[in-house]
Image (cartoon, rainbow, N blue to C red; front, side, top):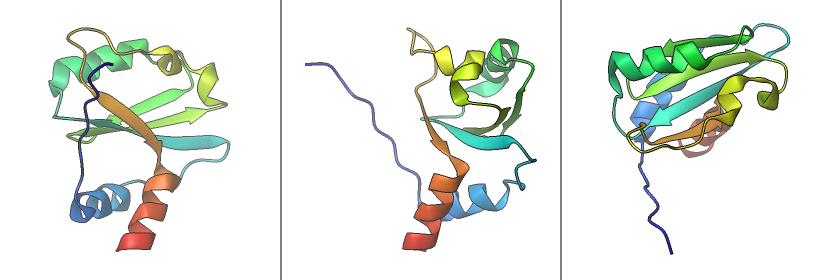
Length: 105
């Protein structure tokens, strides 16, 4: 009873993205925030303002690499919910994207 937005990345895009993800530092985990379109520098800056002290963000065009220490729920970014005018996103762990690339490459 509600609209669901879907978007797809090609295997080439996923390969290039995961190739640019460094090894996660001890005690941290990489999440990849995917956007339907590149949200621009203003949206990246707004996301950075929401981040907590244990979050590191690196814009990557239509994605952002989010590295966090501790559980996902410990970050203020975990509480983000879609709002009117906010970029459409989905989040997956870098390990999940790596498994997809390994399986279908």
